[in-house]
Length: 71
Image (cartoon, rainbow, N blue to C red; front, side, top):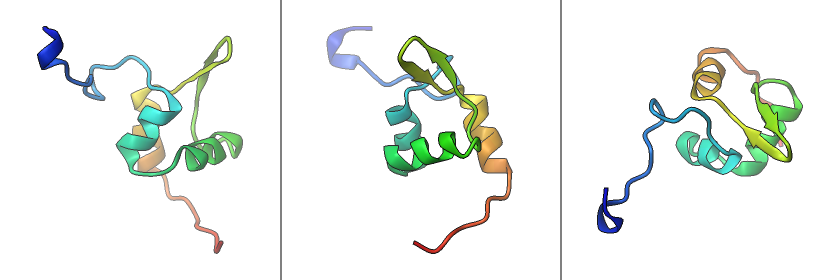
């Protein structure tokens, strides 16, 4: 793969995603990802200071029903 043809790794091929990547895939903010993590709705793995999210965890999140709160 050359520099001119760099592409992002599709979700199925990635082993783990950053909070920013997960937010982009879901179309939500990083703060919402952080809130989901704090509420234990999204499973993460910590590697030092890094927070890694497996694509399977995103799929699991989307399959569950989540109540919404008024802002």
